[in-house]
Length: 379
Image 1 (tube, one colour):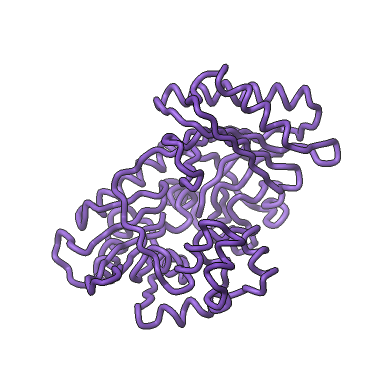
Image 2 (cartoon, one colour):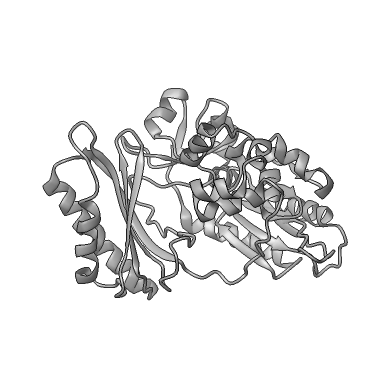
């Protein structure tokens, strides 16, 4: 679970913001090991133990063998033949997550949950009146250890970007501070893959441009970055300079509703794919009704047998809430997807987003059902 500590410096103001992020170490696995003594000290993976199972999270004992989150369970067992696999208990994980949040609320009400295992805290004006954010982070980590018998890592810096990076720096059970005076030097030697928003494909494009570190990125003009990466180019330009003005947002607005399913066997016949798409639409309709959500953008997600992944999206004027609304758009998106016996589909997902018809730069919040075939924890 990640909870970052940040110091914000706003343009034109000397006000120093202090925000905390703590990262719960191997959260799902740690909860299982805490609650079940027989699992302590052994290589453990949480997830579905089947041919299409995926590791939701792995204990550090398992990670020493190379087992990682989002890895297929087959590969995980190949790397660690004596791996113990347990199914996820997301009700329990949410209970423990709430307990962590209760501790955090003793210091501030400005909390931005990111997932079950991470959140931001703004402690500029904190309840105990502790002047140093690092001391608050230290107290929170100690209370998590004493009261919940779990460990957490913390990052300390002046914005979300650097605090997130800092919290990962000395995991597990570590704490790192990136001081404003050292931020630019720190970013200069940082691999671009560590920057928020830089996934494998974006990193590949940056590498093609000769950009491998934050220092390399800082040399690229803003015009070039926006030409290649669109609106994200401005963000990368700022990140390379240690600028991240995003506030801690306590109001979590649902941006999307989605579902996805990994199949027991890869599919490639058009008739079968269409049937599965129909089932996905029906499931999405149920989730939309349950959450009372109205969106204008439908996104189709396809993961192939080689784990490569594509998405296709379409924005329409009417809100997408019923099967009659969704199915024609889903079929149109599917028509843009290429698949075959040599390139079959492993996973199919649908989500509705964009409740206000704004640009599709919104954060997508997949509300995934933890299906028996696959679930994941960002860890």
